[in-house]
Length: 153
Picture 1 (cartoon, rainbow, N blue to C red):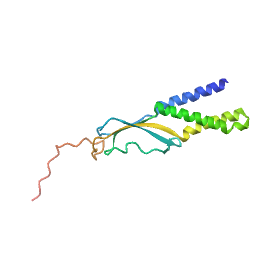
Picture 2 (picture 1 turned 30 degrees about the horizontal axis):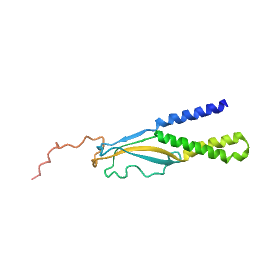
Picture 3 (picture 1 turned 90 degrees about the horizontal axis):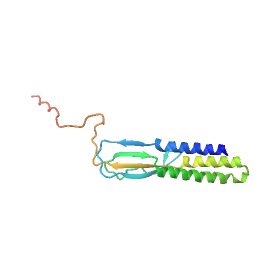
Picture 4 (picture 1 turned 90 degrees about the vertical axis):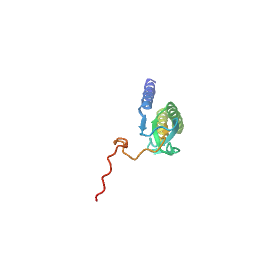
C-alpha cells in the first residue's frame, strides 16, 4: 500500500511542476487596441498537432502580444482526462482477474489520454494599427533624413 501512495505522490508532484513551466509570451512593437481576449486551444499527440483554429484571427492588424500558458482550468481538464483514462484502462482489463494487470492498464490509460488530448489557455490583444516593415533591430523611422542629392547638370 505504501508503494501505491508514493506513486500517487510522485504523479501529483510531476503534474504540479508542469503547470507553471509552460508559459510563453510573445510581444510585438504594435500598440494594443483593446482589452485582452482569452481562448482555449486544444492539442493532440503531446502538443504536436493543433486541433483548434489559431487565436487572434479577428485581429485585422495582427497581434500586439500573445501569451500561452497552462491555467488552473487546463490543469483540471488534464486531471479529468487522466481519471477518465484510468477508469477506461481499468475497465479494459477488468476481466483478467489479475489486480496487477488491471492497475497497469489503469496507469497506462491515465497517461495516454492526456497525451492524446490536452488544452492550453491563450490570452492576446489585437494590434491598434499596422506595424512598419522595418526590422525590429532598426531604430524607428524619423523625419531628419539627409536631403536628396542635387541633380547633375
